[in-house]
Amino acid sequence: MTQDQEPVRQRLLAEATRLFAERGFESASVQEIVSAAGVTKGAMYHYFDSKDDLLREIYGRVLRMQMERLTRIADGPGPVAERLHTAAADVVRTTVENLDDSKIFFRSMHLLAPDTRKSVRAERRLYHERFRDLVSEGQREGVFRTDTPAEIVVDFFFGSVHHLATWYNAEGPLSGAEVGAYFADLLLTSLRPKA
Image (cartoon, rainbow, N blue to C red):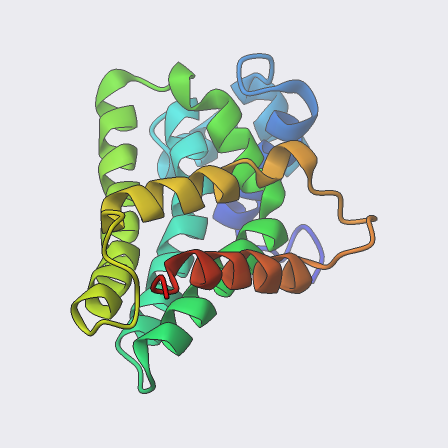
């Protein structure tokens, strides 16, 4: 598909992602984004209300995809330990696959308007709560240790996931799937009941 055939909204998001990653959210202008996408400002404002809106959508599309996947995994068949392992590995892999999006967002989130920032945090919190529900389910079933609150387990795990953008290199020795498997193994090991 050529740039002219790619939907305008997708071109705007792709160019905004590229420019924000290269120059930073605050340094990339709306004019640069629309020029790179080959559209007018009017076309951009047809799809997005502001540059904030573009930034929110860059992260929002990743978060929505991850939430859909987590819901499918969490509601799926199998023992809770397997579902949690799959969910943990998946969020790492999909974060690595969308690393620019996540990196841009976490580096620039503080620049969003307060209401937008609050809304995005609430959406991310829903993901974390759904993930926490898997930990809690395993604790109730006696599969996972109960001496650490599920909320602390989840905050610790996602602290590591959100830190991926600072060190992961796609040219490095490990794929996103391999890092995901290691993270998931570490999480499940930390949840194993004490003997």
